[in-house]
Image (tube, rainbow, N blue to C red; front, top):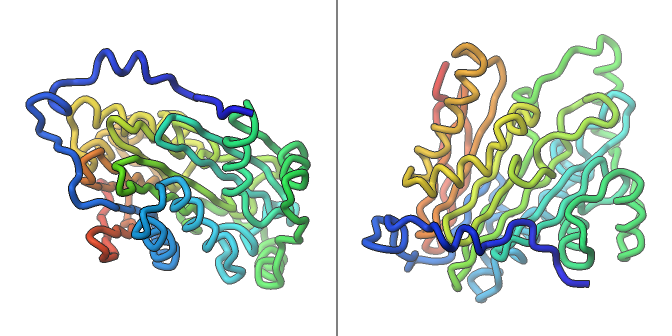
Length: 316
């Protein structure tokens, strides 16, 4: 089956602003490849950068980078070993989007280690964008993915401890999502986002990570963006899409992230009690980030070097 184009480019092609492709403030990136990733997952960047350095494409790189984190049983936020929901079930969400606007996602997926690769299969092998729950699992099994109990001893123990008093958890207690944006040697952009979600969430809860335009968005003519933090609030502002559209208007990646977060701050009377972090990459390879509160770490790989950055919250 052919891939499904989620957003057509013809409309945008008629209205691309001159500041990007005319007397440009934004030039084509001559220092490709570039990767930006939420939080401190150096192995993910290493794997993705290795693919890009061998002239691999951006979508393969972000999938491979996220798979490394999903397979780490010691990581309690992503993939196998993720902290479960209130019923002790590990449920996973993931999405991918490529340079042509194709995308795929899975939500509420259980007993499959690599949701990012299942999302890729949804994109590549179906006419759909999103599969959820039992349907997503059935599809994964049909594509050769194996059933696997994702609840490790470590996460099971943490869940049983939580059951004793059922303390209300919030997303800034567990920074749960890896989002990765990449640009390859051809200048093409892609992104992936994968998570175990909010620890001890209600059974059936889905956050922003598998929702195209919320947890992840890629426009190959402008840039890309992705999110981490309280997914419900990211969904309300179509966060990643908003960041990309702000870059289209001329904001830098950092400014676009900050401007999007300002809407959240305004909507919560200036003092939200949760965390959201955005990362963004412009077509020329410039990257940026911003978060609501406290601080937020992100990794950038550029010119074959990887560096960890910390950004302070807009409000404290």
